[in-house]
Image (cartoon, rainbow, N blue to C red; front, top):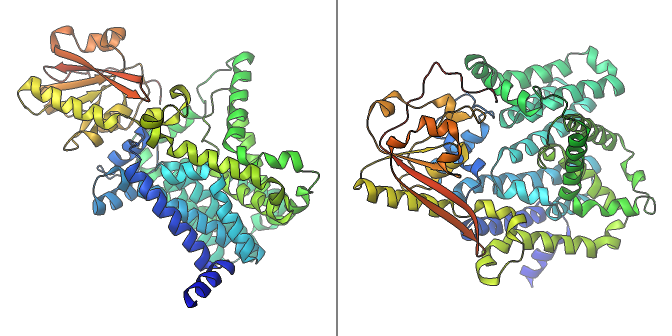
Length: 514
């Protein structure tokens, strides 16, 4: 009886004990999934893990925080896929707890805070950042914290509040460059809503503190020819010409369609906006602040979509403050009771999508292979083990070097090949630069006749430049390996055993894309 009483008290008061219990259960279920689902690392996850083996102040395409976190956890737990993904699992639940804290602090209603925090489990974006350890989860956490602490600093206008906001802004910048969007947004927001703060020192303390923490990344860029800046500029379409209205229409359609798909469970509010008066619950100062932030980001990416394709996850970093106020409005307006069946079905479909790879080989094709996002996360370990076994057989069990023309393949093979060896990426002009090019290929590998396993996802003969770099006399053996998923072939890799590492001229200008 006493146990039941304590349990009821814990869950019914919607306090910290209740929300901690919920997220603890979520952590355990996600960890079980990471260990048992049989889903290999995403190539980006493998790349960021590889960075952790080469500590630096920054890296080619991203700031260093993700590498530091990977280095810490895998240094303690070992270099396992589940240890990499544990970072996403823990940070995802931290975001859920932070949403609870922010909601409770701003609205003083524990039950509302509990509902909003648990409501995140309905959203595809929350599960994505909580299951796969990419820089998206760091950007979400950094933007959410900065948004909240900047708001608190506006209200308190004290040295400590501005400094604290700046500290977490700086940490967010160490996670992903997209936090830089907060600088023009914050300036414009104050310019139009609270101009007097631009005449005081607090806002500039916030900026100085954040940039100071970000300083190692700036120094790294200065020492490496501003590679990170060039990469971000090219991603932003700086070198792109106007592609024509047909492509613009395709880019814009894909952009907005992708964002609607990402936020599908919340689309119900569009149908009941007027009936339930949802706008009445979004009129507060904090709500207007959040809406202005998301409007700034959406308009920025809408402009970029005139020149290039925008990936579906690129705006995810800015959505979580919006999720907070929308879930609050849905609950307070009573709309949740009307759409709870829709929400439940959406949640079950989402969970089904996540777990279906576990049953794919046993229960048939729940989702067609061509549209299944997990088809790209299957077979990497089998490929690496096959290469190690087959190349050692061909070389008489000699050590060999692994080389690929794509950093994604090279990183995956570094993680999944027995012994987790150093791998390399062939430098040639028909690709954009990557972190492997910053590290380079050591001269002793090109000066010694050590066997090389060159791995590609299309035949060597189909690329004239690569075929010239790796002449046929250097190839002593070749084979293929196909990856199958749900009974279908999803990828074939072409494996070439080379007598030695190809020689790349250092004087040759290879990269025009960053």
